[in-house]
Image 1 (cartoon, helix red, strand yellow):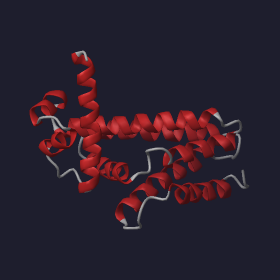
Image 2 (spheres, rainbow, N blue to C red):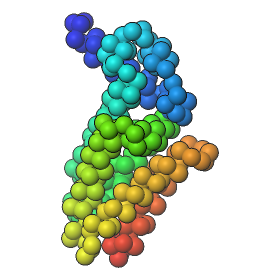
Image 3 (cartoon, helix red, strand yellow):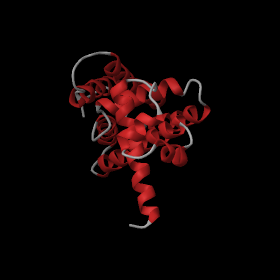
Image 4 (cartoon, one colour):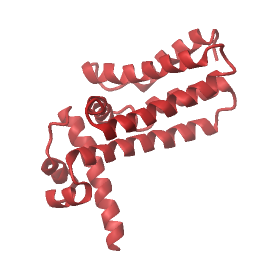
Length: 193
C-alpha cells in the first residue's frame, strides 16, 4: 500500500482510538501513549501526525461531526415536508454512531475543552450554528418564532447528551431521546407530525 494510504489509515486508527480511550476513561485525562497503543502505533507517530493530544482530540471531534453531517444528509434526503425535516435532524442527532457511549463521553469533554481552547470553541460554534440554522429552515413554515424554537431544540439535544453522560442510566436509548425532542417540537409547533 502506498505510504499516503498508510498515513490515512493510521490517522483514522488514532482518531478512533482517541474516541474509544477517552470514552472509556470518561475524560481527557489520557496520554498520547495510551491512545497510540490502542491504535497499534507508536506514541512518536501519534505526535508526528497530530502534534498534541488536544489536536488529536479536535481531529476526533471533526470526525464525529463529519459522521453527524453524513447521517443528517442521509435522513434529510427522505424528508419531504418541513416537519419531516425536523424529524430527520432529530433522528440524525441520536442515530447512527452519534449516540453511543464513547461518542457521548467525547462530546462531554468537548464542551469542557471549548471553554478554554479557542479551536475547540470555534468548532463547537460552527456545529451549533449549523444545527440551529437547519432547524430554523425547517421551522419557518411551521411557527411564528422559529429562532427561539430552534435554539431550544438544539439546547435540548445537547442537554440529552449531557444528561446521559452524567448518569448511569444504562446504554443510550436513541429512541427515547428522539421521542423527547419530538414531543417538544409537537408542542412548540402546535400539532403532531
